[in-house]
Image (tube, rainbow, N blue to C red; front, side):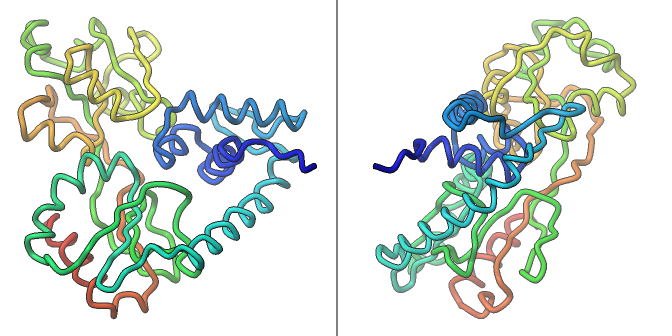
Length: 293
């Protein structure tokens, strides 16, 4: 009888290993940071050895983890290829787009009605599960990826540049009597999502504020949780522009300062060059680009 660990443990480790981040793995799989951590810890207990270690606040694969990663990735690739071959989701005139869960919820879904109005003959399947698409094996036509844009030889077009800046509810801001300078954040609860390169430390450094560690902090596993906490008046979150624009436009959030920190990552439209000749893919890509003009 085969003794294998549960699939969700393996998927949590493989995703965290690709990103070297529990936070980004949680975003990709649509679960919490705590769930990723628990699954990896359970897998390590099952295997009897550590798969990750931390060095200077960075997540690093151990020797065992490094050896295990390519074998596990190959196994997932094989399962996805077999599933796609036998149970294909594609239909004539259909389009399968892979999008990170947070970006899909906050940016793409509010706009999809306009695409359907413009192209009623194209059926869309949005998926946020699994790893980054392997276009040679996966049933994916187009992908929106979060990263640096370096995915040669595939076509990669910048969609949304990301900035980070404090946000809070207007009632919260009114309740504390407003904020005149970044130093006022020292008397306010900050809402944090650990794991991002550009966090509160980086923004406060640019703004001339004090040390992040000196603040009252409430931490969350995912950005959407911190944003919702800010909407509910718990404190001030460090908003990521693509994930807070709907709340800012609706007036549920406001930005108390004009200081914005450019992120080293952004959202890109990614697919193989040859896919761009397919009319439905070109139509969706062109529509996305028009949305950000």
